[in-house]
Image 1: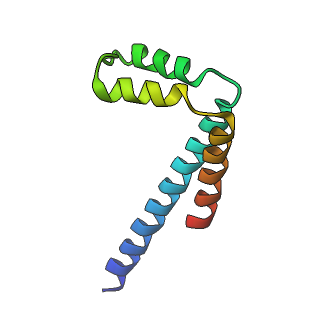
Image 2: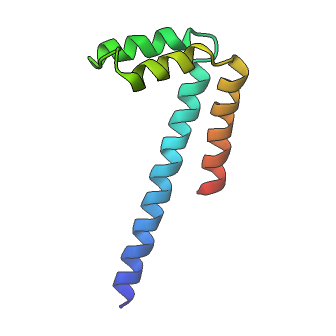
Length: 88
């Protein structure tokens, strides 16, 4: 009985660690985009991953990325890191 509780706690801890690491990676990635052309960077990744740029979802993402402001990027980056700290 104790070992199943111990495994469950370890699984929860691993999940929280991975979630925090992913949120930190998102935050760092967002902050690295601060003074760059976000839409251009996203278009580069679409080409690199050989995604269809005429796909409705890809097109919508590219359109939204072209309208994102540096303040929103900063909010996303810092918010992600704060959430990572508070969720662990």
